[in-house]
Amino acid sequence: MSNSIKILFASLLLNNLSFAQSNKCLMTEMLLTKDNQPINKILIQYDKFDNILSKETIQYYDGVGVSSRVSHEYNAKNKPVKTDYFFRNQLTRTVNKTYDNAGNLLSESESKESKVTNRAIKLDNKLEQVFLNEDGSISAKHISEINANTESITKYDAQNNILSSEKKILSTSGKVVENQYEDFLGKVKKTEKFQFNSEDKMTRSENYLDGILESYSIYDYADGNLIKVMAFTKNNQEDYRLEYNYTGKNQTEVLSYYRNELANRKVKEYDANNNCIKETSFNRDGQIINVATFKYTCK
Image (cartoon, rainbow, N blue to C red):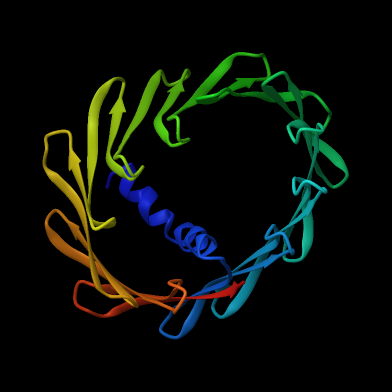
């Protein structure tokens, strides 16, 4: 399965969240069930400025929930200044950030059990992040740089040798048009390229390994709606395909094909604000795999 398809599936929850925000609604709960038993749940709380105050993820094992929670504090400019991470209601680490008057990140530090485990300092447009061992010695270093149309991060080991580098190239509208990754130890270069139409909708994505095309995907639209995603191998053989059927204002259907055979089907239901409130996944035989339900708060 291509990286583009994996990203598309992984972003289903994020799409529900961001789509709701575009409709002045914020997702507050997602519950995934199988055979009417919970698999996992996500709970989100916001402040009056729509900043996320806390996000709790509960994984269920034999009906028993295990909680992971992230809480945020913000300054007067709605920039996150403190983030606490909890597991089973026990604080595991804290991240603190400082900013200049323009809201640019100046420094960042992470601590576990009152010990600083990494720190970061902003110099010009570069952010240098140093990771520390328990004895305070340096274990690794990351340097991030943001310019007008590029974002990059270079990772080093304790001896300051380059381990890997990642770079994003952005369009004038802020869309990522190319991702570059290089593993200096494994001597591997990976590249992802993306093409967009005049409406900034993705029309094609390509995956390269050491400069050679490995796979690509094509995105088709009708009336502004995504209707098909087709993933191909480097030999132009169809690997995976998604087909979207818009059966009405309150429902859509997504059919997934692997090597031209139906793999599964999803049905999404929407409320009056066009927020997805239910997503049911079926296997190729029509049996329910799982059901996801969503709740929102709207202004």
